[in-house]
Image 1 (cartoon, rainbow, N blue to C red):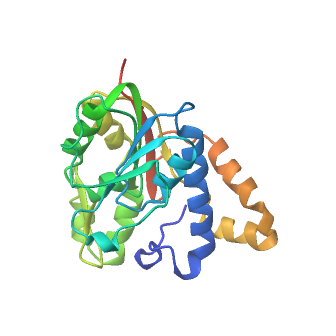
Image 2 (cartoon, rainbow, N blue to C red):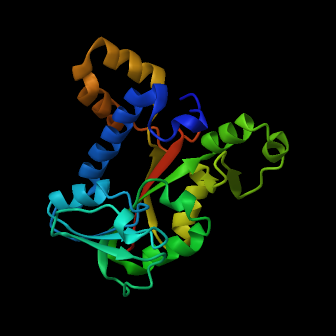
Length: 246
């Protein structure tokens, strides 16, 4: 998939149809991934709220971490009794082996520059057999953002950890599939799979939806039924599923 300009990554602009597809892919992937029986799910996906609500509507009890730096009246609110919000910047509020699943969507482990410490905490709070779903920025995205800003020296000197400055002044951490696997396994988790979040290009999605607006479900199923495991040469984000050993 061709790199997406930084200004398009907020879900607006000319790539609006692509983001409709992208979020439909995330929703369907999460639906397939969530535990089959009612469980306790921790959502540490940057306080977005979208995925916490989906998990709660699927019958799970959800603990949603919200950004402690944002005012309380600027946090997402849910009229759903199964979602409990906690203002915190780490997982010290949770005891060991206390949750069945952890969602780290919305590039949570890229925004968290000390991802090793965060994943160690995820492994700690998971019950044996519990699973985590992790989304990160890919090296493809990182190199595209650096190239857009003419940071050619940064591209030549990229080491094991790729920290990318964005035009808005923020910094995120980008991963190859091998680095994402290593992040999870070093925390003692068993990696089930790693894949690009999407391999269909924005131009392909736009063309298909322009031809038939009812094709969204077909596009989503086509995306998720392909298996480009560990292919980090496409896609702006990588997603992985890992399990704590029993």
